[in-house]
Length: 480
Image 1 (tube, rainbow, N blue to C red):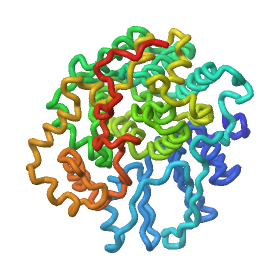
Image 2: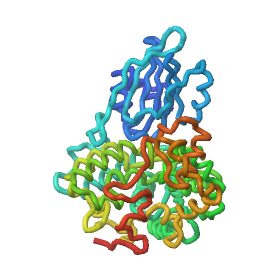
Image 3: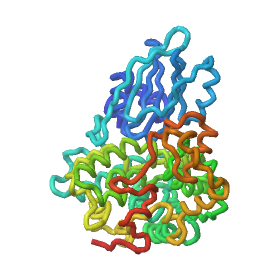
Image 4: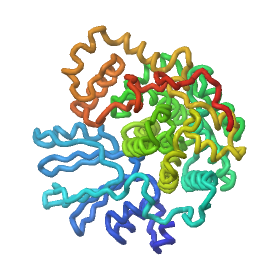
């Protein structure tokens, strides 16, 4: 679209060449605002002796920046690529941190190759209308049919992500979000005559709820379905590796990454799928977390959606990217499409709240008149990830806690606040995550500004299982 819109003459078939043309056309802010996709870029303008950095609005693609007081600048998609550079800056301790999503930065390059910071600017605010020309013209949307517009924009978000030189597949938990994405992907793949069957992948311990629900979805939409079964021993063998790849000690992020890391490893080792669609972002956009039922007002719920989306690159977005990228897979997340999120977040706040104890009611209702998914899946209750991949009898986080108990002594937490004054661990599980993190990324606890926790409740554990509304033992919410 950019080629036709601006009349660019490309010299390569590389999909990032447009970035240079956009920069040359209108500068760095124009460049970042015009990209309808996920990205990180570094542009060096040798004529002007300036260097520019940019990152997509939701931080789907990772970027870390190291900067010393003397102007040494280092960038990398992972912190582990920069952590040892501390030894290369003459004993000075440089500032290493995640690059903020939705921002561009400008640095002047001096004669010695060092840099001087010039400016930082946010080119996008969460929920705003995108600057670029959208795939679906806004004037083509219905004035009255909100459900039809949601279907149209989510379908478009999947369609525009079909461009790929490698085989496309999808992660499928059998929950609402991944099931909607998978069903739309299969439908559009047929429309586009992709020369292969879409592969879907589910992960769990034995016949976990997610494994069983994903099987129902796969049969309904017609994917080549794979089930990845893991054991407590598998958890033990990969836990430290997961924390290393995540580059965070956040409790719920580590827990939820175990299954995603294992399924990504399976995809890499056993299939030719490289591009994977997933449902991340729906809980943040559509108020899918169970604690949203306790929001004191519609405005408070809306504000928390914005907070979650602003910080998604530190939690669910980070998890999804790092666990897949660790195995050379490319993640695609349609729910974080800018046009879709702009429209959905712009709907009246009260309509986006849980209705009758059903979270994501508006999103579910938008597809209720279709045969895209079985009603048992469309209205399936929100499952805590630890329960979805394990069982109601023994959740995944309980498996992890038993493992950690075998590795740490009972006096572990006595000096936790002294050893880790920032985001102090209050459980042995959290302490263990922090120990492994510090071993790989010493003195970088600022990567995590706070632990992800439910709002409007006094629970001390991030698992939805501890919220009073949680109903893991129920089969479904029931169609409406």
